[in-house]
Length: 478
Image (tube, rainbow, N blue to C red; front, side):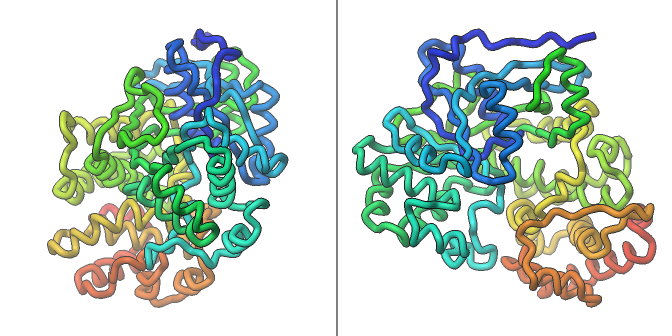
């Protein structure tokens, strides 16, 4: 039986581009594009179409597929009740591939009708040193862009060139809005871009101070990678011939600090929350959802699971995550106004177990170097200061070491790791047979884990148990 497709009801020919979005991955296409697609039904909001920008050579395939479809694609929303909904998305009205047409990106940022630049460039994409919390000016591509402003390679160089043209054309202020999972993502974005611009062009830096805003935001929607088999399955259900379909869960949330330099879409009409301070929202989400995903990822992969929902239907993992949320994290998560924290946690468990979404555990495991400092370390620091039970966190870090070092699960099945920000020094620490060396990994540079005797003892014990007995037996002992 085919799933009915809900087509957008607005005339795309009447939609203007008001937003430039950099990073046209699945999450963006299930989240911001979905919200804007809904908003464009309102004839007073049709100046907020999106121009998608892809910067990487590896983006060629998705760019070509989307261009063949005039930017349109289908989004399958997988209900926890087993009922799916397919929505045709038309809000991506323009598309630029930086490799093919780099000047078009800065021209689009500069034009007066563009009011907002949004970003999904991953947690690690902001080029912030984890030890110093400073922007890495020494990066070779950054150095290239500092001296070759009209031929940028990085997102910082492209945006700076666009702002420079905007300033010269006197086209007014603009907002840069991060949609990545980072604590105070707007503050991080501001630090990265303003540091780069200050080093490249002091006149532009002065203009940015008074003409560009960087709101904080919190985003949430579980959106798996789409495999070749998924494309076939999604099209079979929808009856479409979509080369770039996306699927996601039925939960969605976007909370944004209301700080826009040149106006904004009325997204509150379609369920987005605007606030003066997103801190409680982002702390709740990063501490409970993202940290729990991280806790689930490495042990469940080593256990032998490959799909998140399969792991979450195992009572041992369901209990591990719920205990982590209730015992370890809740004391450090003040609930935002009108939020029922118990309901939020129960809903998270249901979301993770949603078989229709069936996210890949390997996706959750990827880029731990960037994720640990954001999702785990802030609350671990508080737990150490308060002399809390560290069982589940020490088990997680021991599992992470085993995952990086041995690359074989409990059942003898090999797996590939994806750690784009792993340094040569990190690799030496992973290769070391002294389990304590791992605690100096770049992911843990902002915390001295060796200073806690209880942490060290428990972590070393778990590392040894996992090596000898495997994750399954070790987890049973917790």
